Amino acid sequence: MVDTQEVYEIRVEGHLGPGWSEWFDRLTVTPLEYGQTLLIGPVADRAALHGLLGKIRDLNLELVAVCRK
Image (cartoon, rainbow, N blue to C red; front, side, top):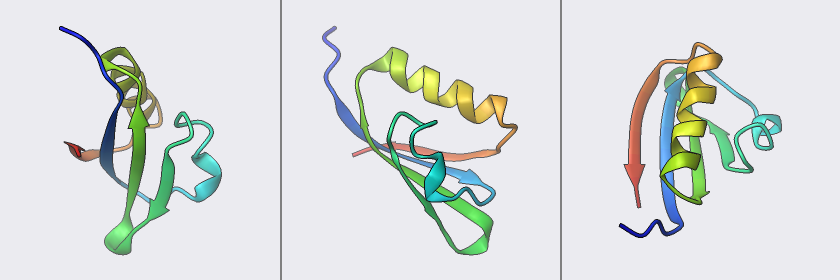
């Protein structure tokens, strides 16, 4: 299987500001209504995706959705 850079949308509970973008590998960080945050952008490969999910876990954020675009 060949890993290619895909765009992902990751939705979490809780508000994070745009300043978190660098922490999340430069994904765009957008606070949404109802106390959620959308992280969106290219993810290099499966290992990078697992790294992002690990950061969400480490911040004790509830994962709402992960969608590949």
